[in-house]
Length: 393
Image 1 (cartoon, helix red, strand yellow):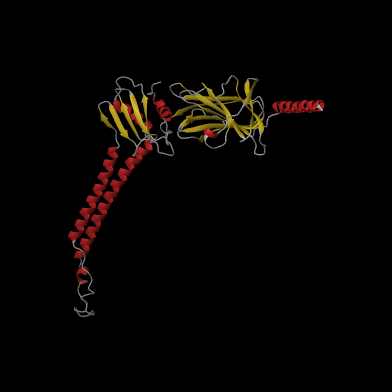
Image 2 (cartoon, rainbow, N blue to C red):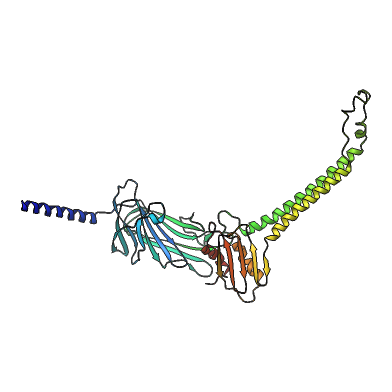
């Protein structure tokens, strides 16, 4: 009896070990697609490598993600699609081969897994343009791989990459993305973008560029001025016509009964009304002109109120009404002897589409920018200002 029991236990243990070994060395499930995205930040960047299994893949499923060799993994887990805090971390086994680190794990709750890798490969700035790049090698065949670089809104490629397109991202950013089909194991993929952030291209959420906004303000004032003049001219013409009608013979005769009309006493209630006096028309004309001048003056005052205000070496301008959600103070390097008004104009032209207010302080060589986080960010503001050459490194 004891021998039989021992045999059963040994056999059971052997089966468990065999199954575990088979699971450990079984071929991983193939990805339907892999996304490789570089988030370039000022203080360190993050490389995200995310794989998605086909919908038909049953869970639990064993899978592998490859990352550059020597990478220090910050987190590996499943992406559930809700708050990031709810995404569960995965236990993994690491191996290295052919210049890549491979992380194997078992997915139980989601068909999408992601590895997050801190990296020093951020964006470089040569004083004129930025350069951002990402490289990745696949350890297995993948039907589709998307390489993406997160860049500030308004970024324009100096030399566009064939097949790469700009896609919307989170607030203040976009993604420069290239899709590669039918990637084979061992393929080395990369994407590089050399770009600038110009004032004309830095508009956020469809806002107008500074030139358009300035032209629109001038056009608005001009249109209202023309409208007031046209109204005044029309009123004058109408007054003259009424005056001419009141002095015409037919108008006088119209108030007299005709030969075939009823007796005067019977016609008393049906006689034609007399034209309005010229004095009333003049009063209406004066009133209309006063209203028009008042409206035009109000518009001009409103436009003048948004112009830069200067006190000593401090220049302030309000670009948009409303309270700013956040304020960023950016250090500048302005050559000695520069006119504060001219420097402020250069800075404000870039910042106008991205912020609500800006205050340039020539004494401290800095600029305080009030903005809403739904439209911009401090890094986007700095990126937009960089082409001016006035931002301190």
